[in-house]
Length: 355
Image (cartoon, rainbow, N blue to C red):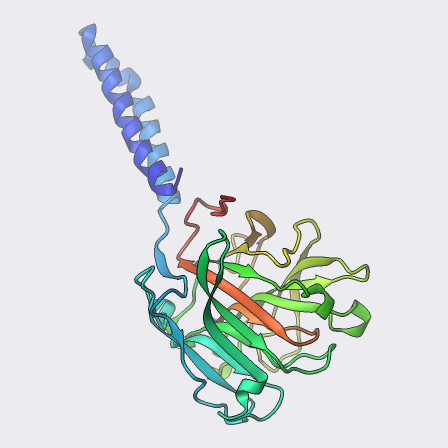
């Protein structure tokens, strides 16, 4: 049952109850006096319905794309002044969903792939370092789908990390914050993923899945808060999920880690599609929340403050990021992106369906 059904059924049920009570009382010709007796009960039901309806407002779909027909990725453009990267816009209307790239929701000024390279590049050499494509593959249900394929082909040696290719939604700090958001997509790691990560003592034992950062520090792109979910390889070779809240959002102050949660129970799927879901509610109080699930299994549900020192807004959402301390190539395979302004299947409820 979805939220809309829940909200609609509560008032309908109350109406039936009230009508039944009225009919029963009227049948004994005692409605006037009995109505006084049952009125507190009716008022209580109405109050419960009001609270329930208010707390379970249906979420609104802001964007949806399967990278279907009509969607393409443009050539890299706007090369960095430093020479070590460029921007690559995703464009076109997805004929399967009707939504158009670039994303207009959230006040976004860029939606596509940011290319960050280890060396100085130009239009003739950037393809040697990073390539990104929309292409047809066998999807999560065994049927043909289009995926966004991000591939960092050249990077620093294992144990070092700079080159990366995040699927990025970038927005100006002047647009205000993104207080509540739910994102989901299908994702796949290649079969040799684990072998590309080193053991912890060599420093190349991690890969980023998701990240957001704030911005506007001194009216610049740097921010005061970040949440990042990584996959970590431990000393035994096992992979696990790690989520951190800190201030590493490209500003000059000393790094501070506010919280960290590791999940060694929910497996990291390899060589198969999995549904990734993430939700956050930003707050300086105890109601702040960051929630993530993989194939319906919650890997983190952290409550508490998640606003930075300067109360800066989210400006960069890395939907996924081909970024790792391990060996190249670093690949991302994704499809079925959805963005909502809240939990679409119920508060704290995963939308994952096995079949």
